[in-house]
Length: 123
Image 1 (cartoon, rainbow, N blue to C red):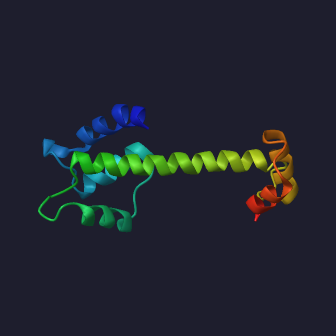
Image 2: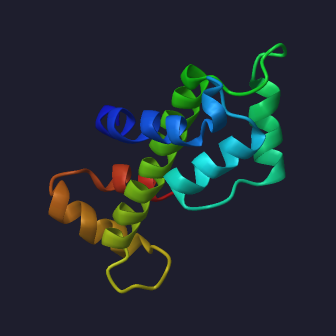
């Protein structure tokens, strides 16, 4: 995360900070999200972020931007990791996991894991 933060986020902030104001306006923020994540944020997402900016501030400071983007990136990485784990368990590409899928996966990774723990995890 810190590698991503150091190399990507500050240059994006600087590139999107129109006129070097020291903050990102609503439109600047939208462009930054498109650059970093590849999608245009919804009005609700932008409204939420802008509402959390300090009331006397005209936009999002670099500190706030870094915190927001690091949180967003961590969530994205977590989601991606969970998808990879699910795909590894879904050995027949059914789109769902059966108890048998769980048993097979756990027998490979943790062969001596008690059956009751596998059942609890599956539930």
